[in-house]
Image 1: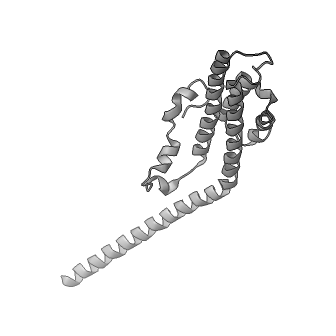
Image 2: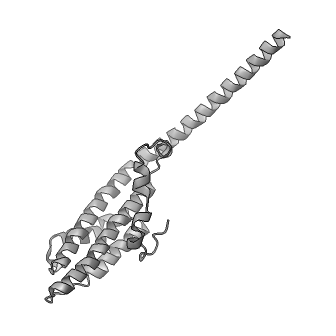
Image 3: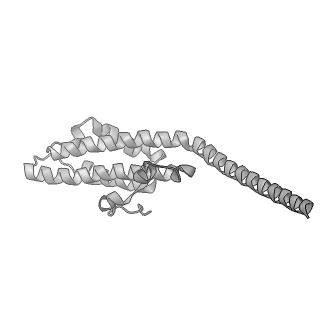
Length: 183
């Protein structure tokens, strides 16, 4: 009887050990695939980040010019924005960022004239331009957060950094007028 219990216990230990080993193997394989994919995507995400920072900064500077009543076309940053708009950013942007860039270009750069603008109109136009510039930054944040595959980081994130970065509800009022930015 004791020999049968020992044999049964050995079988249970063997089964549990084999099951645990297989489980750990598959978890390791899953993490390896995520890491490999992230390492492959890392240069693209870094380039997206660099170009997004450039686009957001250029748009913010041009929006500030509009607020001051200046023509943003006279600012050298408009050349930077246009080079991103017509070129570099087009390689890595998603549809949402594309729409925000088009909205900024259409409503801020293309809409400006060389006529003198009074202070009240400049302030109103500056507020609109600032919202368009801000929407570029938010669209960049949205695009970058979709490119991150955090894997197990989501499960262990004591400071809630991943959740904070990917929470897209905090700027819905800015993004609601933009098509293709759902989800």
